[in-house]
Amino acid sequence: LLLLRPSTEAIITAHCANNPEYTAEPDNCPQNEVFMECGSGCEPTCLSPQPLCSADCALNVCRCKEGFIRSEPEGPCIIPSACPPIPTDIDMFSIMPTCDGIACPDRTHCEVVDLPCVDSQCPQEAVCVDDDIP
Image (cartoon, rainbow, N blue to C red; front, side, top):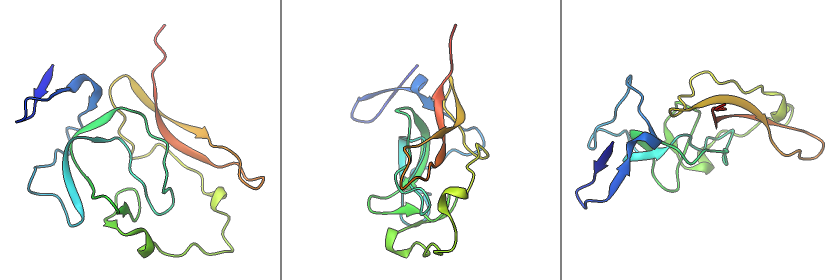
């Protein structure tokens, strides 16, 4: 199944996630967000400014404009300098990620994966990974 943009550029919808609970409209995105026919399946947040994302996309979604990130996974888009400071007495790597609220594209599922260790701390992140097909 293909979608055609006005410019006749084709989008293969099989590679896009479609969340039936929420479909954005082109003119109804919140402040600091832009409508995307095929947007990233995950977005940077204050706690995860460089998330690991799959190449798949989410269909008809609002995403943060360039130069903005989410304050939290479902929060508003803000400039990174507006992120709240992280208290120095909290170990960032002790926050355990979950797959709660993560909508993965078809033929993928959410898993908590290990990220590269930094200063002997080994963080984890919830990401969408391809399903194993026998």
